[in-house]
Length: 275
Length: 313
Image (cartoon, each protein chain N blue to C red):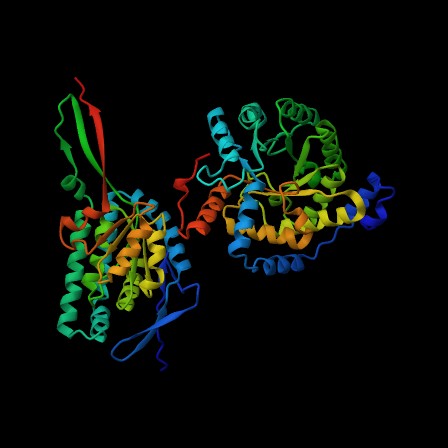
C-alpha cells in the first residue's frame, strides 16, 4: 500500500494554509524530512487581521465556556497521545521522556483551563480609598498577542507559550521555528477543540524574516518571547514597537499565576457607595 | 441599431434610446475574464501611494442610517475635510453623502472647504414612490444646499419592462437638479445580469445623469468589479459618440484599499486616466477610507496600522 505523507501547513483563522509566498523550509527529524511553510510578512499581516477578529470572538465567550474549550484540548491530546509520543521520539527524545512530556502538557492544559474563571478573583481587588467609594481594580485581556515559542523540543513548553495568554482571553499568534512540526500537529487538535477561528493561530518559519513587522504592527499589543533570541532582535522589537507602546516580554514566567500577569491590563473603577 | 446611428445632431429621440436598449448584448464570460485578468495587476510603492491618495480624493464618505444624528454628521464631515489630521499630505475626501434631512448640518461644517455635500433622494433606497414625491424630495435636498444628488432608478418599472417610465423619471429629476450633479443608482444587485446593468446604464446616461452609480449599499449584493467594467464600457461608448464624459460611482461592499485599487485599474484600462479623478470617478464608502488611511501610513512608516489611531466618523 502506498504510504501517504502529510503536508504540514500554517494554521490561521481556523484554516490550514500555505505561505502566500509559496516558500518552505526543511525540518529534519530522525527518519523523515518535512517541508513546512516559511512565513512571510504578508502571512503575518493576515494572521494579525484574523487574530484581531479571533480576539473578539474568544473574548466574547463566557469564562466557563473558554475553560471548557481548553479542557477539550487536553481531551483531544489524550486521545492522540501515541502520535505525539512518536513524533517527540522522532525529534530525538527517548520514549520515556516523550511520554512524560505529553502527560505534563496535558496537566498544564488542565491547570490553565481551571484558572480561566478564577484568575480575576486572584489578580483583581478592591482598593482601600479615603472616601465613600468602591475602588476596584478590574482586569482585562490585552488583545492580540504574538508568542515566540520555546526552541526546546517539548509539547509542554509549547503549550505554555500560548496558554497563559489564551486563558485570560487574549488571542495568540504562536510562532515556532525548530519545533514547527510539533506546533502544526497540535494545531490539528486545536482545530477539533471548538476554538473560535482566529483566536489561536500557528505560523512557522524564520523569526528574523518577520521580526521588524512583528515589532511594527500596531495591532499586535504584546510580544512574548519564550525562546532564546539575540539582543539584536530584542532591540529591533523594542524600537519598532515604541510607536504603538507595545509590551515586550523576554522570557516571561511560565508557571503559575505569574505566567498570566503580562497578558492583563488593569482598569480602575470608582463607584460611589450607596447609603 | 448602434449608438452611433441613433445619434443624429446630438439629439437622442426616445425611439433611438429604445432601439439601443433593445439591442444591448454583453459577452458575460468576456467581462468576467477581463475583470479577473485586470485584478492581477500589481500596484506597488510610489504608484500605490498615488493610487491611495487618489482614492481618498474620490471618496464620498457616506452614512445613510436611520440612526444618523446631527452629531454623527458633524463628526463625519470633519473627517471628510481632514481624514488624517496627523498627515497634511493626505487630501480631503470628495464629498459627504447623507439623507436630505441632514444636508444643512453637513453643509454648515464643510462650507469653507472643497468637500461637497451629496444627498440621496427620490425615496432612496427603494424608489417606490410617485414621481411627485421624488421631485419634492429632490427639491428639498437641493434647497438645503446639496451639491450632488444621488437618485435610484425605478426598478419596479424596469422589471415590468416600462423603460420609458424609468427614463422619464430620471429625466424629470435631472430637470429639477439643473446644474446640481446628478448620480443615478442602478442597484446592480437587483438587476443581476450584465445586460440589465447595461440597459439601465444606457437609460440613465441618455436621460441626463452625470454619474451612474452601482448600488445603494442597502442590499447584500453591493458593487462588483464586473458591473463596474460593464458600466465603464457604456460610458466609453457614450463619450465616443460625442455625448460628453460621464462619471461612475461604485458603492456597496468596497471595504479595503486593495479592492479599491482594482477598481482604479479597471477605470484606467477601460476609460483612461482622465477618469481617474473625483470629477469622473467616486467611491461611496464608509469603512474604505479607514483602510486607505491605514495603508498610506503603512507605506510611509513601514508598520501595519490600526484604525484605532485615525479619526472616527
